[in-house]
Image (cartoon, rainbow, N blue to C red; front, side, top):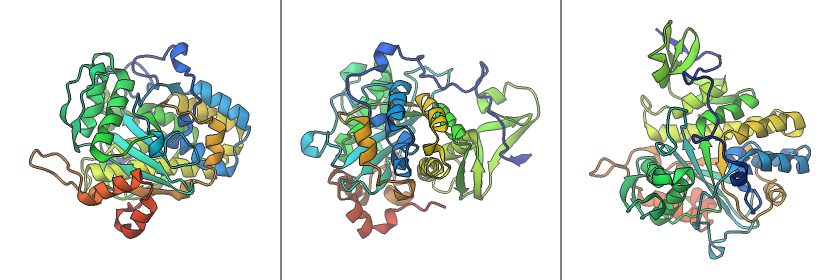
Length: 393
């Protein structure tokens, strides 16, 4: 019998509660520290919680920056692929582009057996008064450069597979991200100032620290990842082994408050949706915006105790790259950007554009959008092409 998603704490693995650790275990302290300042750790997915809500007034800024510096794991996610000075990189006064990659890292999965099913380019124009989220479809056919670090000879692959190839033979998460950045630049022209890997299981803690988020479900959809077992949500792999009364989890149309596990599970669904992965991309963008809005309207940002809890939760959810811009400068430089200024854009008109291989291609119009990101002309592009704006309900 189908039921609505109910409240409760998820049982995600047989060995205990949801993992928030890096799949290979916590990084040694020596690897957590890098010489460069940490601005990317406060960018959108986490920036949706901190940076983009800084205009609301952050309590104890010096303390906040210090706490964030110690909380979030850092890795060199771009390698030598950072945006060059001629492309406008390295300057907080210019446009800022961040590569966001989402992985589903559970305890039973090895560090080199992951794919990035979520690939989002965050673009903040030089005016620093807006933030755009542009998704790259997971099934896009990409020409992937050779990557000696992971002993990968190069070839043709889906976008979601690129991370996997870069993580092989010791490449790890950093290798997966570096190859992703190289590949996106080679195929779309977009380059980045920083990058973040979002561990969706850890991300649950961020939402729980905010006491849930408000989202509008636009299509009735059944969870293809979880079931309720005696009222407790479990991943299907564990639910199949468990005894007890099992019920499907359904997300019903309408605006509603969702707990962390519910919001993430809903944002992961693509089967049973009218436009499949495109609807999932839009729902994941909506989730990021919902987090930003909840943080900016719930009083979290002006309460040091709540901010501290948020930082600790975010430290379990993200691996981030850094630039040469001090954190405080980055925060105050973006104080004009707020949750309601975050625009969600859709690629390929929100529908599958396949080729003879059954993989996605990027339409000419979407390539124009990517080029507008590169040239910091996205506002003008959106004005001329309003249909690229995603419907948020």
